[in-house]
Length: 237
Image (tube, rainbow, N blue to C red; front, top):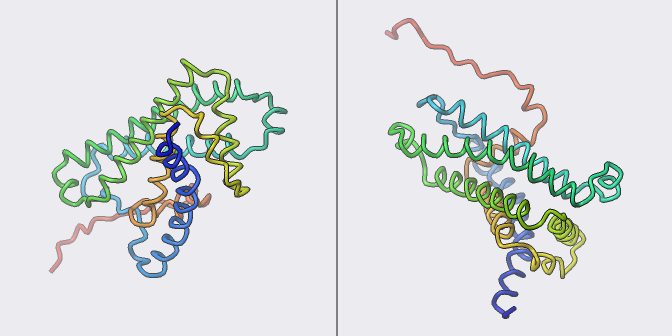
């Protein structure tokens, strides 16, 4: 391995995660203080609802399942996973079949949303460059994730990559300066998946994604009342 490759891996998998988390928390907090009225999902539902329901629902169902699947897989102690019978090889297959299924669902939803925003004139006119950036980054994360699932199914059913990921995440939380070295053994698809995922968290404070703090990261979101929009049937004088 040459010096440039090692340096690049060190920056992406040792330095970048800390930088992204700092920007995510501090940037979101600063936006809430400075521009609280921009803290919203900026939904285009009122402009045109066509395809939005299918796209948004498929994406959110898939991405929420994938997100919490990652949290469970990476942060649950190995002793608990072993007691559940989820040894690395089993864990790997759960990721392939369950994670892969929900990733496909989320990806289909994303493509529906992307084509709607790209080819619906009214929605495209009201869109910002950041809206397309968010969709492109999310699609990249999902596509590289699916490529990683296929790679795992074809070439690594032992769960060895899962162990490397867990060691990397654990090393970051314990401030191990050599945590990044675990990622040297990870296949390229997985590295691109993680890199794009870090970029998604990086842009959260500056885009519509900021609403996840008060939306899907809030359990009460699931029980919120629907917003009711009424048309004024009487002509205004």
